[in-house]
Image (cartoon, rainbow, N blue to C red; front, top):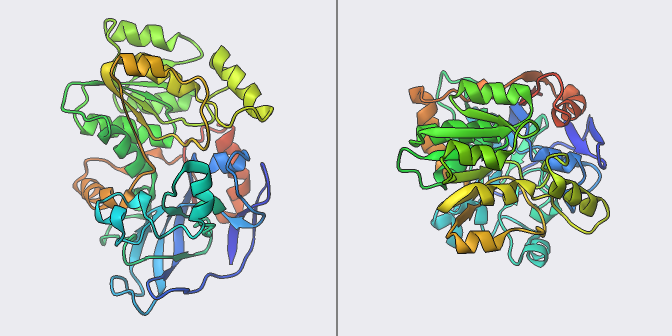
Amino acid sequence: MKALTWHGKGDIRCEAVSDPRIEDGRDAIIKVTSCAICGSDLHIYDGVIPAMEHGDVLGHETMGEVVEVGRDNKKLKVGDRVVVPFTISCGECFFCQRGFYSGCERSNPNREKATKLWGNSPAGLFGYSHLLGGYAGGQAEYLRVPYADVGPIKVPDGMTDEQVLFLSDIFPTGYMAADLCNLTGGETVAVWGCGPVGQFAIRSAFLLGAERVIAIDTVPERLALARQAGAVTLDFKEEDIYDRIMELTKGRGADACIDAVGSEADATASLDSIIDRVKVATFMGTDRPHVLRQAIHCCRNFGTVSIVGVYGGLLDKIPMGSAINRGLTFRMAQTPVQKYLPMLLERVQKGDIDPSFVITHTARLEDGPDLYKTFRDKKDGCIKVVLKP
């Protein structure tokens, strides 16, 4: 089959790889009808995610049609259309039983490697390094889905791929970002990063009762899409974000701040982000946490900082003195997608939100390598890429 594979920094190829096969009775094989390039895939493209190997198949936003089912899988049958969560979860362990599917204790066969880096292991993920299981991803013609009696959700008749594909990751992740803010109605929420996850965080904050959302980016197309959702937009290259948020909130700060950027904040945003970039380039640091620092300073006393942007290692110069002395709450996670799937699918069915609003590019799998670069460089108005194998 054809798949998008990693061969080093900036080197993504569409090439022939072995077809997947059933390896466990709970597995399923799906024929991929739609997949997407995620912002977190760009961290792989940029070479900042460890434990990647040449030829690894990428992708963790995937849906398609079931073509083969393991003997122990009683949930799915051949012909079912399904969306596949990016988190691989057994459904039976301590964490899965409590709804923390992204903390699954069984799905990462390389958990010892992850434990050495992070102190313990999260769940395995599709297409996202051998630290997280080395599972082949879904930017391919076919995908093996482990624990397929737990993860995938069946797509109701009449719904298009474009309506449901993003239930695999970015819609639940953006929704979780807002959900972690403990919104009760009337709040001001600031969102750093108006990429796909940020766009869903903006809309989810409004769905959950926020009165005002402040969206921070510099890409005109992203800011325009945020304004369409009703957000107040700030261009971090044109104005001082801290000063503007304090002005908009009469000196109090935002009730909640969402970091939807993560480890690769724009290196021209400020002096500290430039220093971060130098440290990463000279192997003196692993991440560029400028956005997290700014979110902490812009959050009101006893407010919440919600982190859904991807960080991989050790963060430098985080203002914990500010957080502690002002009573901030930090909430963060890889999204336990299975927890949110049924409820978000119902919202889509009811018409509360149409996730397809974020799509700007639809192309063949063979166009994937070029579109990785287009997406990374924010060219051609690119916000979200959908690929059709």
